[in-house]
Length: 108
Image (cartoon, rainbow, N blue to C red):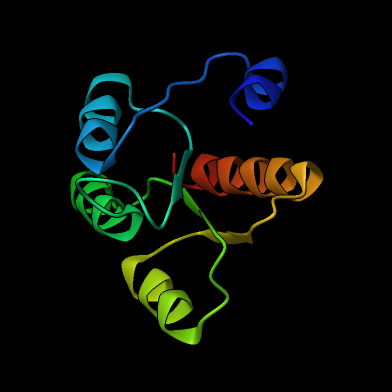
C-alpha cells in the first residue's frame, strides 16, 4: 500500500506506531493523515485524538478490518474524516484522500 500511495501522491511519510505518527505529524504537517485503528504502542484513534489536539482541522482517514459500531462511534467522536474498511480498495482510499484534502482547503 505504501508503494501504491507514493506513486500516486508523491511525498508520503510513514510511522511504525502512534507515537511515531504524532512525531511525524509535528515535523512534516502532512495534508492528510492515514492510520490504522490497531497499531503498536498507541492505537490509531488515540493518535488521531492527539493530532486533532494539535490541529483540529487535520484530515484523518482511519483504515480498519473492524466493522463494529463501537469503533465507528469512537472514530466519529474523535473527528475522523473518513473510515475505510479492509481489505482496502485502492480507488476508495484515493477518493477518501482527495475528498479529505479538499475539505482541508476549505479551512485555509
